[in-house]
Structure formats: C-alpha cells, structure tokens
Image 1 (tube, one colour):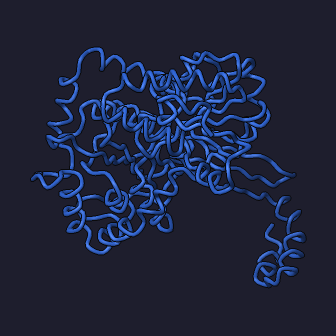
Image 2: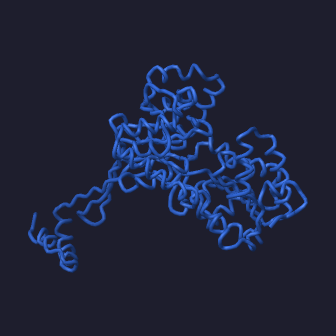
Image 3: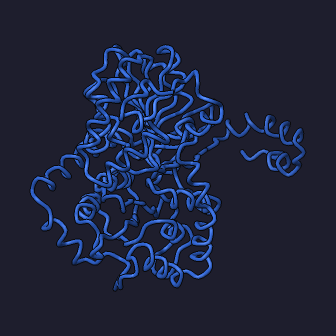
Length: 443
C-alpha cells in the first residue's frame, strides 16, 4: 500500500503495511535473495561438477570466461611482484585508513581468543577438558565485481591471523586490467597472507572444496559472496565446511518517532547500494516518519552515480523499502522473524530494546552508529549471516578458525568410580564390548 498515489517517489520506494502484507508477500520478504539462489542452481551445478571432475582444465576455462572475460592471462596466482608493488599504488590516505581499520579489528578480535587448553575435575579422579587448535588450511572468499573490498579482506584475515591458521588462501576477482585490487593486497599482507588467486564465483568455491593441481584443497571456506557462489557453497557443503551463510547484503533499520528522517534515509542507502539482490528495509510504526524518510531517500538516490543508483531503486522496489507496523512491539516481532544481517536500532532507548532482539547478525545502537562505520573500522566483524540464518549462526570471529578437541584423563579413583555406570548404560544400549572394556580392574 502506498502512502500517497500522486507523488513520483511512490514508484521508487515500496511502502507496505505489515497488517496488509499477504502470506505470499511475507514469504517473499523473509526469503529475500534466497529466491534468486534457487534460480541459479542449474547453471551453478554444472560449474561445480565441471571443476570436480576436470580440475584445472575446467577451472582455467571458467576463470577465462568469468574472471578475465575472455582476455588472456598468464597466471592464476598473484605474483610476489604484484604483492610488493601494491602499497605504492595507493594514496597515504587510503593506506592510513586500511591501517586504522586493521588496528581496530585486531583489538576487538583479540578478546575472542580462548584458552588453548583447559581441564576440570568433574568428580574425584575424573578430569575432562578441551584443547583448542587452529584449522590447518582456510580458504577466504573476498568478493568483487561490483567493487573491491579491502574491508572484507581485513574482516576475514585478521581473525585467521589471531587464531594462528598456518595456511590461508584467498580467492578474489581481478580488475579489468588483470590485476587484483592493490588495497585488497595490502590488507592481505597486513594479515600475513600471500597465497591469493585471481578468481571468484562458483568455480572458485569448487576449486577450494575439491582442489586442483593449481589450487590445493582447503579445510574450510569463509566469506560473503554472490548468489552464484552462495549456491555453490550449498552444493559442496557435504564435503567441506562452508562456514556461515553470507550471501547478498541486507539490513533493517528499526526506528521510532525520535529518529531523524534524513539520517535514516542515508543509512537505508548503505546496504541497498551493494547490489540489486540486496535488501534494505525501514521498519517503523510511525507512518509520518516513514513518509519523510521516503522523500529523503528519493532525494538522495539522485545523488548517487550509476550503477549504485540503479541498485538502490531496484532494492527499494523488491526485497527492501518501508514496512509500517502498528506499534514498536510488532516491529520488534517482525525483526526477530526476519533475522537481519545488519540491524540499526534508532529508537528512544536502544539499550532497552536491545534485550528484546534475539535474531540479528549485528545490532548497532543509536543514531551515530551507522552500518558503514561498522562495515569498515569500528572493530566488530562485518561478515554476518544472511537470509534469516542469524537465527542460528553468528558473525565471523576467531572461533570460526579454530576447532575444539575433547580431552579426558581418569586416575585410579576416577576409573573405579565410573566403571559400574558405564557397564550399566552399555548393557542397556546393547553394546557388550563397551561393557567388557570396563569389566576388569585397571588399577
């Protein structure tokens, strides 16, 4: 439902009243880009199967077609010369910004490091604990195509470095000149990463998952990606850990009458400009505020260059726009059902509302914490679960690069104490060998 039918902006930003949203449209909103992922499965399946069966032969063909767009290329891997010259191609301002972001991201993620080993005496003579070790080889996916993202490289590379991962490989697409963006390379080197491949998309995911002569197999893949790579992740998840589902960008701004319409409009554009498959939604119970925000959104869209302007216009008429609820409680309920990647709380008392939000990749409090600052340099990780998976997944952290191993030790008293309990449960479950193993005194 439109607030006004006689304004030009009604064709640019869709406004819905939650009470009038049909069940079918509600499903559409909640699924967002997942619908597009389903659509590309057939072509992605062919690509994944090609790399799995033919290795480098298929990979080189897909890299030529999708990453270099039929232009010749000499090497799939970024050379030492490209790495060493990267910083000289950037201004001091950009280098300073990358270093500032790196410092803050490093400081935040250091707090996530767990104890490498712990033991607890669960009863006399019975000791149980965990040993935490880094995953040996990780593949990081740093997207491109609609831009180049040193921030993503930092959000992935910093926690990998802190976790102590021994081997980190990166896939990221080249620019039109065949070289990888120098800011991405500088960010990678800050994280101690030099194994970088000029590729992205479904074929890159398949190469990491199955391995080829040129690209050794990894143990886990992490990173946000396009719908094609997201579909490929789902297809290889039976052979490799693909981490949290991080597909096309999405955000919700939950606001009340205290919010400034101009700031809300600017913040709505942040995730909308990522791409036409993104989602950016204002959720509010104040219809008057909604109208003012829409007017501001339309005014500011016109200031954006192409293709960002076109992306925003598409987003605000598909998965995004404005959703008007009856009250704050209904807004909160919808947010928890939606489980957004990014959530801004621009309400009178955001710290109070915070305790009522159960499903969100990140929660940014107040009018001076826009998504863009969190995306770059605030310190919190901006690689977040999308598509509603914030109901069960967390943001990328040091923990994603670690694995836990259970450790146990029984002293003489502990063994004697648990023999009978083990024997009873083993016999109940029908495992006689389990029972036989504790039938003798090992003291």
